[in-house]
Length: 503
Image (cartoon, rainbow, N blue to C red):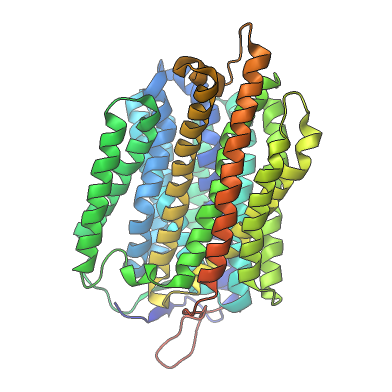
């Protein structure tokens, strides 16, 4: 594939286009993040309205997340070939159509399928949005743009559940999805002013690679989701997914222009940034998902109170990313900041082992805030620095790969953390059924106080393991980022100029 990128400006000057591109991408990222975080709030109302429950209802969330993870890389690679703006528009259209079909769904099966369609579009918005920013900005401006993207994604995660709850309560669950339709239409309108860019050479689409990757990752993720249920489906999904991903690697090695250029994985600095974002997720996502259950089960907190406590960890990712990007733009070492981010996440998890029944939210401010700040630093610098390590013609592929690792890694962390926590509880209570109930926040019975202590001990062990993993990752990432690698955030033409760029 050619290493050149063609920028197709629509009017003179890069800055007006850059501002429009940034706003359009940020709105798209916010909508996708809010949809990820907020859909679960609507599930009870959806279940009542469509007479659905159990696994089929939960698939309203699962189908979206699966499709987003499986299609992000493919969408990013297609963006390099067919144009980043064009593919971003197509992805936004899919997201909008999926949201519209969700709002109009006559039954739960149609709704689940519509959520999967919206998830495909969401994956494209994330990958193509990152590619658009990488193709539009260079140098410090690129760092600031991606920092804003990280901050906006964090804001969507934080605000999503609250805004979704308000919309569902005030308007109902169907109108809450129509909001995404309106936002999608606004993005489509704004995208018309964004400049186009693509690789100069357009090779055939790697259909075999795309199919084996989507099928492999999708099957692997499905296996992870079903693993806690017991039975053969989960392990079978893991095995089949692993086999298909192995086939994908073999196909990619034999393809001139694969959907994923494997030389990218051999770039130590690019993989350092990729491992960095994955490792911070290890220290953030498990706590984000499961600690509110602890608060409700052990301390008797309401869902609202538990959510408010978790704001101490999530609020920093609305502020810190832009500050971290500003530091890099001012010359602070991005490698040092990434190492610091991992150490903060590791230290915050270790500090969180002070957790005890009834200790109250104020006592957890320090550890939760530390984890949140570390995650915010990672959000603010990872994408821009990773994009600087790849050729301009492959920024879509790189953005797709990075977001695929991030999204699938988060799903992996959620599945593994939950499984490990249940296993630790079971080792203390001696009953699988009781362990499942305690992990779900049900501590009713005569041994409530004792089970609360066992639950807490299990949390302590899990947190120490997470802290150790993040600390080890900090060392590995620091070493990888110290290795030689490509470091250019300036896509250039043959004459060496970088038109339509903002620095």
